[in-house]
Amino acid sequence: MIKAFSSLNQFLKLIFLAFIIFLVAKGTIWITQRLQENKILRQVVSRLSADSRIAEVLVTKSAFNEETGKIETTIKFLEYNSKGEPLTPKYFTFQGNIIQFQALVIRFEDKLVQAGDRLRGKSAYLFLRAFMLDEKNTQVFSITDLNQIPEGYKIPGAEQEFEKKLWQEFWQYALDPRARKRSQIKNAQIEAPGSMFLPGTIYTLKIEHDGGIRIDTEPVPEILKGETVS
Image (tube, rainbow, N blue to C red; front, side, top):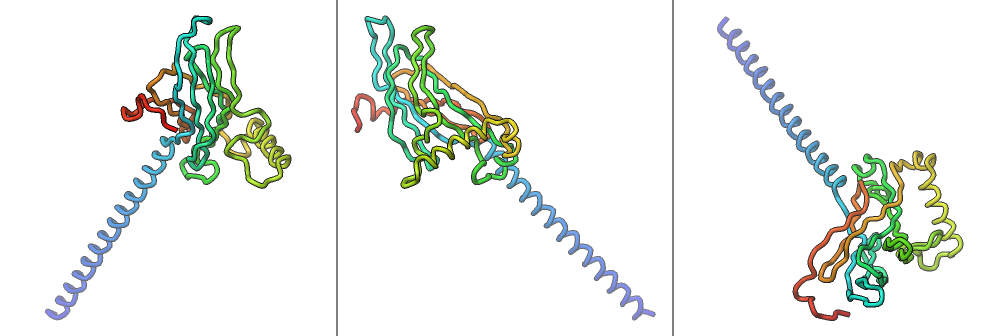
C-alpha cells in the first residue's frame, strides 16, 4: 500500500514537472513569436517611413538684375541614380528664386513597400522639368525630355531604339489606370515640389518610400563657405 502510494506520488510529480516544462516551452515560444512580430513590425514601419536622396540643389549665383528688377538665381541641380551615384550636374538660371521641380511619381501598394519588394519596394520617380511660374515670364528648363531615356538609366551598349521603346511602353503602362491595378500601382501623378532658393543652403530632394517628393534644407558647412570646390 505504501509502495503503491509512493509510486503514485512519483507519477504525479512527473506529470507536474512535465506540465511545468510545457508551460515554460509554450511561454518561450510565445515570447519568441512576439519578439519576431515586433521585429517585423519595426521593419514594416521603417520601410513605410523611409526615404532616399534623389537630388541636391545649390545656389551658385544670386545677384540683383537691374534690367529686370529681379534677383537672378543660378542653381546647380545634381541628380543621383538608384545606386546613390551622382549624375552629370545641370545648371539653370532663373529671373527669380522661387523654383519648382516637376516630376512623375509612382506609388506602389503598401504591401510591396512593407515587404521591401526588390523592384517596387519604394516609390518610383522621373524628373521632367525645373521651372519658375511668373505669368507671361514663366521659365521652364527640361531635365528629362518626354519619350526619351532618362539620364542614369541608359544601359551601355544597348540598342537605343529598342531601349527607348521599352521606356515609352513603361511610362504609358504606369499611367494607364487599368494597367496600374494589374501592376499593383496605388497612384501615379505629376508633382511639383518647390522652395525659395537662397545662397548658403543645400536643398536635398528626397522621395519617401511610400509617398512623394519633399525638399529638406541644411546650411552649407562652414568649411566650404567662400571656397570654390571643383
